[in-house]
Image (cartoon, rainbow, N blue to C red):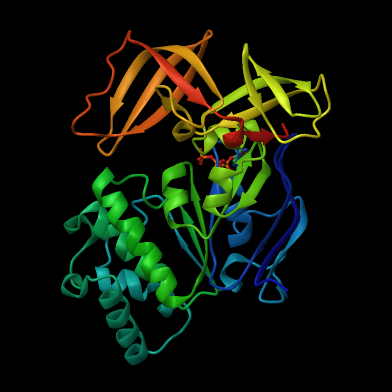
Length: 350
Ligand code: ATP
């Protein structure tokens, strides 16, 4: 049995069903992200696991114990929110000690644990400060220490990085992952940022309108999205409608260009495929089966990668090329050849 099991979970607010038939099994020590656009139900799932929201139906078990009907404070779960959740009138040390005090942990043990937690987050020097005397990133580290101090069974993180600036965000997310792995604590992390989810998760649940559309490792989700929604959301970006022309060879027609998919698809079938930005090659590339003409619309220099948007047969495609110091990227308006291959096509189910 998995450490955390969510079965057939549903939540309705009035007639609005915001979480539908949600299933998830999380192994001990796993870091899972719930990823999806605003309003898709991520926070509601998290709040049901925490015990702040009562499910309309379904069950949640943690370490073999059914917790669905238990109050939040009886679940032994640590939670960290977006921001500004520290008690402003308590020092850093008292904030971290809060959960231990509630649990009735004695003073000496409490002080030792607070010391240990502050060392873990690298803020031992700040024990006597108040939240307003800390940066946003430091406040969130204290919030993490406060969540972890009572040794919860599960750690729930609700967009804990979204109020921070880009640099702090990246360093803190790495720190959270490092601490999570060091402690081996089972963690569910809510985010709408695909790069964030990709970079720190063992597995990702991509949510769409209350449903878990796909569950998989970052590698699987990015390289083998199963639906158009997942493909677009995780940055596979190019999705196309194609028609199967020949079942035996797997030949499909993509707006006039021919691509060869694996054989066995029914002739005449209309379906969607995805091509990752790095699967489209600028220029005539040896070994690629089709070359189409496009016109560059936008050029985004991102450092090691240059992201190009081009119009091809009335559709916008996104292409990533590696930066080369001896080869400036094309300028908008340039007509270019783009190489494609059916071997890179991802067949989508929906
Ligand atoms: P965000 O990233 O914006 O926080 P989310 O994916 O976490 O989005 P939820 O906060 O879970 O989404 O909300 C899902 C849906 O449920 C939304 O349509 C929201 O308006 C609705 N909702 C959430 N809480 C309540 C509530 N207490 N009463 C009524 N509707 C609610």
